[in-house]
Length: 278
Ligand code: FE
Ligand code: FE
Ligand code: ZN
Image (cartoon, rainbow, N blue to C red; front, side, top):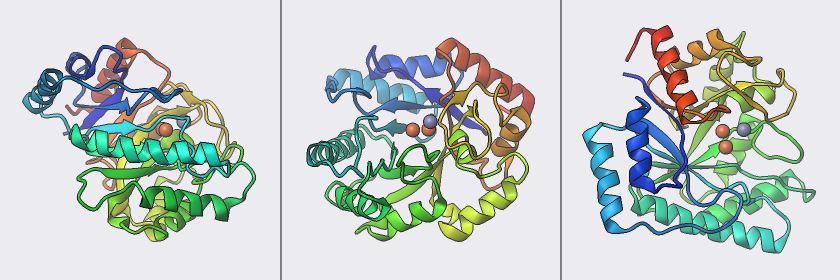
């Protein structure tokens, strides 16, 4: 069975979001762990949390994914920015764990001039003060496109971040198809080779989620511009190849394509039809 969903708004509350997943004919979702461009969040009433849990159980949702805000930069050399990032990852891991969300993904960050080594040290330190062994939730490092001073555009860098961690078993990887392609991994002509490299460097067992996006920008462009499935440089066939690859097909897939919920509903229906699977 295919586990697929999209990035969803939680503006109407989390119970409503779960209902919208069902309406979309999806069976998982990604949500922001808090306001993606600010710092505030809402605490849900117990009643709403119960309704959310009930919907997800009744409809057999796969693993759910929370995405940390874009304003969180754990690699930053600026003290205020870094302290803020440490607080956000600590709070949101605890909050999303309490909600029963399986994974929380974040962008490793941009070192903004202090260098890759120092940036990676900050990321490790920030994660070490946030991740508790008692939590069920797994933190996922997202594969990045490598724009600007972004860390995490190579599997090697992601591996090195993990090496600095106290509880590496709590840290997995989320592969974003648009980002890896923009970073120079040719998933169009050599998906097997890319996954072999991933396996050699990190181990395929660490892969917990896939962001399924086409890319407006070409291979190796180091530019992060998502396209609708089939309308970008990766193309429909290569993305169907990702969905059906034996090393990936049992993972949850999350669309982050430039569509609203109705667009994502059609996109999921189209993918199911092409694959001939439910
Ligand atoms: Fe992301
Ligand atoms: Fe992504
Ligand atoms: Zn992106």
